[in-house]
Length: 115
Ligand code: 5GP
Ligand code: ZN
Image (cartoon, rainbow, N blue to C red; front, top):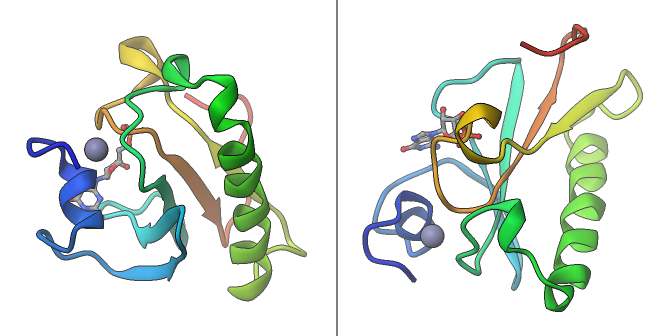
């Protein structure tokens, strides 16, 4: 728990969020500013700042994140139609919250390339 980290506070229950799934390694909650009918954030409980801070010790965690992305898409009914998983890294990548997270977007047709 990093005391000035927004997502650590959500994980700790200090800031409210609409939690859709939780297990020992991660939480999934709704994005406050959804960019699709389904816009979930998959957030590891461990405070890792960016993708660049991942180490081999996190290999199982990242695999688990992707497995849960598929589970969420299936459970909430947009797997068959299709969905997108996005990780923004650092300023040019559009990262605004410095606690690793993966956007899971579904419920509409996506465009390519992303902005
Ligand atoms: P990033 O730009 O870092 O990849 O994504 C951060 C995401 O966090 C954004 O999509 C933004 O809407 C979302 N967000 C920012 N503040 C809050 C908050 O207080 N609660 C929730 N649920 N999402 C937030
Ligand atoms: Zn954090």
